[in-house]
Length: 164
Image (cartoon, rainbow, N blue to C red; front, side, top):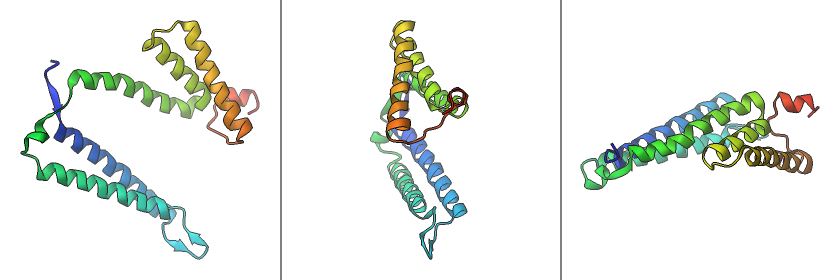
């Protein structure tokens, strides 16, 4: 199975389609909130609209390049083996869970859990070290952003319990 691979062309097509979706979402939301130049300056979607257009143009350029070189040997070269993609997915899915957990538990608690989990799972650190670092890093970030910079970040029920 390790000799099976994903070709460059398919990797580029997937990435281009992903950026097309992102660019389309940015453009759609910019149109929703307003992307014109108003009497008092640009509306909220003015600059994001053009970023979305650039994302779509870049994705179209990549797709055109893949389509126009579809039969060339460089397009059939190995991008990654399925085994290598499996290693990437071992990092990707927990990260997706982490991002979703931020909305439920807040950035600091989700980060503590994420750091400790990866230290134990991938780094093979002891539970004590992982827990210590998992708690210390978000505490330092809390002090830096919330207290020093006065920049509030997403909080969850634990922070609310302490009045933050």
